Image (cartoon, rainbow over all chains, first blue to last red; front, side, top):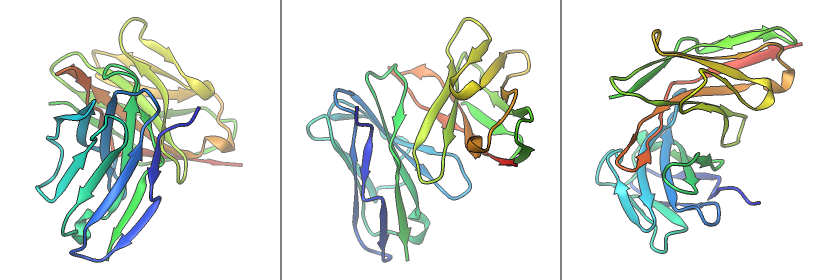
Length: 113
Length: 115
């Protein structure tokens, strides 16, 4: 079946602009995670959704970052007033339940000029 | 808090040779351990995981790992590598707390298999 998909695959923006990154989880998966992977590093946790609610957003670096999952399926990560330091690959993962294996999407590579 | 250290940033090896990718973790509580592989321009794929039980875990593509609680290690091994195993490998730890698993990753080890 279809895996986790993320769009766009690449996004180039200018400093100060607003961006939205989309994640389509595997159908039926209730848990959804966002991670950020900077160059040469492992992924770092950003936020976890169980259904429609953000159960843990402790990894969001500051209030410029926000994520939603209004219908408990697709999620959007929103970044306001982007900075060059936001450049990274943003990974989305989903799991059938919160206790199950996480399946990752291919990521969105964000470049802030 | 948990943390993960992958001791080698790069491991070059010849095809059909054995390989070991090292991973150490720190945690004051029981944890789950994972190895993921990332091929170029692809997402992370789970190789294997340790939750409980037998300390020797077998995964996909001929990989296996051994959980060593006294040494807080979870090294990944393969007896004979192929060119197609060239990729980035990530060790991760999690603790089921608050009703979910938050993965904490190491910095990764780049495995380069040469002919």
